[in-house]
Picture 1 (spheres, rainbow, N blue to C red):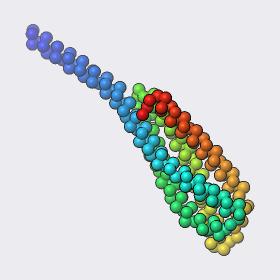
Picture 2 (tube, rainbow, N blue to C red; picture 1 turned 180 degrees about the vertical axis):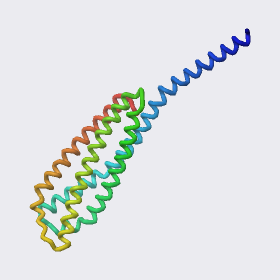
Picture 3 (cartoon, helix red, strand yellow; picture 1 turned 60 degrees about the vertical axis):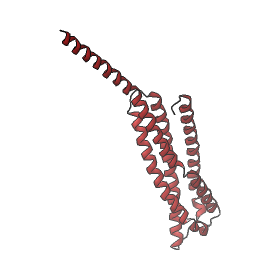
Picture 4 (tube, rainbow, N blue to C red; picture 1 turned 30 degrees about the vertical axis):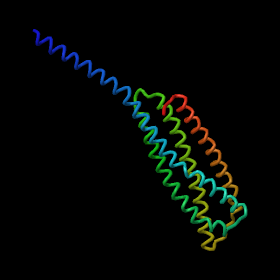
Length: 195
């Protein structure tokens, strides 16, 4: 009888300890993972958007060349545009990886504030991808004009200026939206002590 009580008491103690251990892992485990995934996503996203200053510079240079109908100036920018195209592709890949991290947060439980933050960051990342796609299209347009000029075909850059200006205006608006979304996410993270 005494042995049975000892065994039951030991079993009860093991069950209580196991239950407490399980509760602790469920609470802290998902929060820790949410923080980790969010920070990894943020790092990748920051790396991806670091190209922004270079894009702004090349965008301004291309606009000047187009306004002046400066074919030689556009041809001189070819290597720079090709380099930016490569960097855009690398940035797009980094954003894809950031989105994977934010989606991991969305699959966790008990981390609603991190999910809200991840959702905000996903929105920003998708806007960044859209902006990079527009910048890539602008670069591709420039490279087509360069190839035409090199082949001796007439190129009238001022005819294309309206289309390019519309594209650049769309890109500028998207950049403003991206900055606003990223700022909102940063404020949300700070207000909720996520990091």
